[in-house]
Length: 268
Image (cartoon, rainbow, N blue to C red; front, side):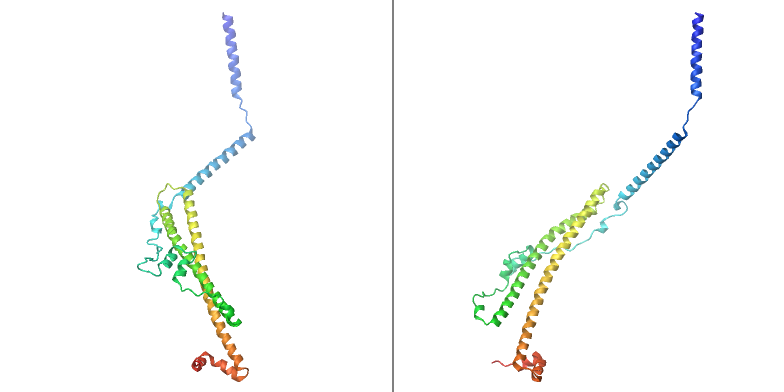
């Protein structure tokens, strides 16, 4: 019994000495230690950068309404699209054309009703001299051009006026969303508002180009009519010079101008 106890004590002592020797020695690797230190430093810098970016994004995402009211940027009393009064009792003869100026008229029916009609040409041109027929054909062409320009301009004006009222309602709704002080709106909602404003601006630019085109067409018709009038006057003066012949007498008659012709004119 004593021998067994002695052997047990020896085994316990040897095990205790072995464990003490193992704990006494610590194995270190300088390269591994340096690498772990660098990795820890980089991770710490990454974490600090992410925290700074988060703070910056939070400050950037903070709406202007957190500092001031957005109602001061809203336009008070914007001009509204007005419609022409087309009451048949008030305007019994032009109410149709007034409706065309409000809603458009692609066929030109209301313009034809409100404007003075012209007689049909028929075979009248074939019975005229070449010079008279040429002059009349050009005058008729100018009249056709003026009719087409007026019909197109009337239709475009009516469409712009009709669409302008709906566009104004969309702008009012967009203004209400822009001036909304709610902080719950995300950056995507703000970008949608910017996209909506850009779309409205594009529509308005398109409408402005249509209006400018109609004005340019009308000016072209007026210039053509003035040019035709000047050409007719010049042709009459040239015909007068041919009648008078060359020389000083013809030049003097030309320089006297239209005033002398009017004073000297007598009904045949």
